Structures are given as C-alpha cells and as structure tokens.
Image 1: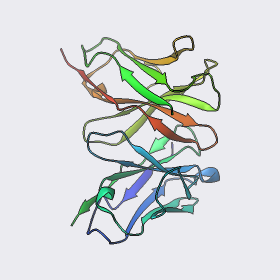
Image 2 (image 1 turned 30 degrees about the vertical axis):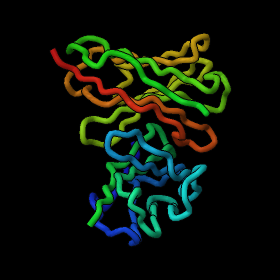
Image 3 (image 1 turned 45 degrees about the vertical axis):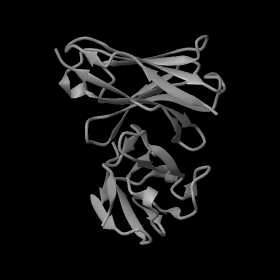
Image 4 (image 1 turned 180 degrees about the vertical axis):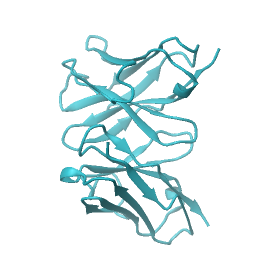
Length: 108
Length: 120
C-alpha cells in the first residue's frame, strides 16, 4: 500500500499569500495518478487537480499542481478567503487507492 | 449534472450490518467510464476508500475491509449500495458515495455524506 504523507499538518497564512502544500508517497506513484481535493467543514471534498498537474473543470488558475514519482505539490498562488480549508492528496498508481492525512490551511 | 445522494440509517448496533444506498440523479449509472464508489471519513480524520463497482457488477475493495464489505448496483433504480457487516465502534464515520472517472482516476462528483454511528 502506498502511504501518502502530507506536510505541513497546518499552514497558517494570510489572504493574498502563497500556499505550498506537500504530498510525499512511500513509493513512486505510477503515471502520476495523483489528485488533490479541498474540504471545508461539514462538506464533501471538492475535486481540484488530477494527473498531478491538471485542473478540474471550473477550478481557478490560482490552484496548481506539480511533481512526479514520490514528491508532489499543490500551490495556491494567492489565497482567497474561500481557500481556507483542508486539502487532501490521493493516489491510484497502485491498489489500494489511498489518501493523505490532509493539510489544514488556516487564517493567520 | 450528475448528483449523488446517500441514504440509510444513522445508527447501527454493534455486530450488525451497515447498509447505505447512493441514488444517482442527472445521469445514468450505466453510462460507462465511471466507478461508483464508497469512501468514509472517521470523525476528525482523513479519507478512507472502501471500494467501488462498475455498472457491469465488477467490484474492487480495500483489502483492509474486503472480508466485511459488499457493494452492489441496481441499474433499474439507478443506485448502488454498500453493506458492511459485523460493525464495531471503529466503523463510526461519515460515509460518502462518489463517482470515479476512469480517465482521471479521481473522484469528480461526491454525495453530501451521511453520518453513521455504531452504538448499542
């Protein structure tokens, strides 16, 4: 099973700042089958990024993904008030499909 | 667009079977190209993939739950279901149904989630 470790656990930033979230895999994620989701309290996750770097339909371009192999990054270029949430990475390079433990982006 | 809605009991007794249904609206469950999925989230924790089903009936389960889980599909009713047997307090969680897109290997549509508590 591929274990995804997200860091930091919590990121305290101000609106307008840049957020850089890390997702590290215990083994290489084949074909970059790495996705990112955003979750707000009491809501279901929202699909953001697939294939490590492709934005889902309707996702603002301030969200970008990068990386390959075992190291992946989600960057939010300029935080908007609605971006403060928990972010999860997810892989299906190998079975079983797994999620990271999440990074909380909170208002500083 | 496609919407998903979970339904089922919010309280299940230990050792019994947890049963949930996900109703798919705004599209056909047989349209192909998608796996219909169950995911859970323990209170205050991360996400855990339970398993998914294709409209043909083919299933794939998380090995950690495989001995207790069954996912089925009813194409005539456009819904799919989860059964998790021999539940314990450790199965208390929010259960989500979601659609996995083959070409993306990601979940693009989610239900709102339903909280299930295992308690006597």
